[in-house]
Length: 123
Image (cartoon, rainbow, N blue to C red; front, side, top):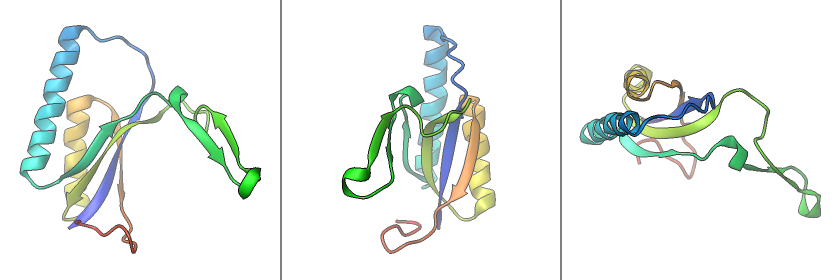
């Protein structure tokens, strides 16, 4: 089993949803996550605060590091959330990504994890 990162991109449109819309949205998300969990695909997921809440630590050693407020890059879209999933292959990961798109109506980037000494696919 391989692991994939499904990055949820948010355009920061700032449209305010009605309570009914939010309730329907959360219902779709909960149903999707329950389906992922039942299939053994769900590893971890989360929503992020807006990019204006980010802090960037830039290179150097020791006292040379610089910390700044705001996103790493100025962009129209930022990662707004993510899922880490188990999937047999890229096609299976893409099938889950399509379900995420249907549930939340945001673009999804799918990237496989590289196995390292500390992160092993499927664990």
